[in-house]
Length: 460
Image (cartoon, rainbow, N blue to C red; front, top):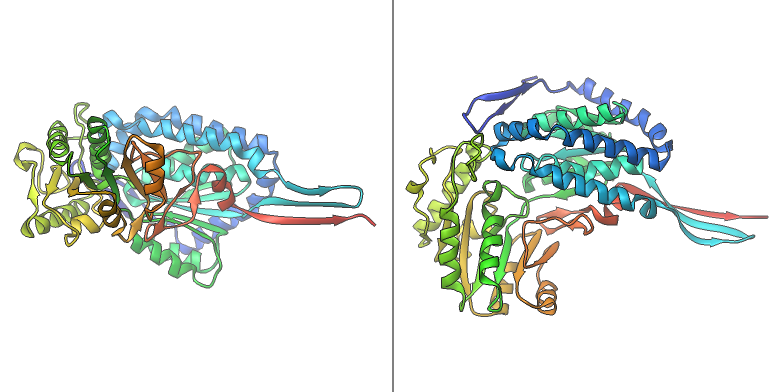
């Protein structure tokens, strides 16, 4: 089997190389996880929670090293590299805090004649296939509730962030989570698909591309293995006439450009009411021109390279096609001297765009955003829904009821008012259409990794 190489976007060199497990070794890892699951589930809930929280604390203690590793692995500027740990802790604390209530049996009757209730039982072995763009946050969304609920977890991290999986395993094991209860593995695609086809897992959570999700579904076909799939996105922002213009520009442009646009719920298209359009575009261009593209290891850098040259190539192609079709670029790429035609990519704002252009309809996952003028809510809604994806949508208005009424008509998993590119652990993280299916976080996140079990007990 060929070793898996992690090519750093910083300099294009191999940064990490790991040998994937053989099919036999992978099967043995699953067998160990299955043998460890019932003893783990038999531990008191408070004990499991304490061990999981200790693991996250151990991970947080590594944040300085993690920041540099992230910069070298996927290009996030080192000034932002510790930021994931705040979200990791917030999500862990919330899920741990609601575990007892969420996992408690729901009593229907408790009398001298009958005891009837619905319990929630761990599924068994949970397989997490984590992405590179937010390698800790996305993994924690499933790892934490799975372990707390009594499952064992096998983590396969993206090849672009191999060290993230190793850091998670190091932290949890140092905190006392048994090695067979949480395992980090390196697998190739063929072994991954073979395990899923063999019904090795009781739940598979995948965050990645639509094509990757389709491959997971094909592998799981006929096994009845439940799947959680968070796939592509093309999240819109809509700026109404009553919006706070400065706040909208600052939040939406940050949502479009942060992490070099490589965010699951990043803003990829913006629709602005005609009364604010010119002012919005002017301020948006000024905002983007304030970014500094450069080495992620430089503390002054605010925009690092894209994670891989091939990802940058997709964005360049989309932008070039749009310009050829009449779109107008507003950012002078030459002003960003670090743009090397490879992973280092200058940001771009496009106007005169429409939905015949790929940059407005296909996922870009890079530092580019198209802005369109709209005359009213109806036009904005039609454009927002003209997408195969549905993860989040951002509506900018000064009225709750208006935002909710518009949100009710948007085909999406989450509706934001006056914010974007954010995840609230108390709310279910979910999507529709080609964005996938299932949900994580909130109390429903525990439902994804447990099954209902009914008890009908009668005294005679």
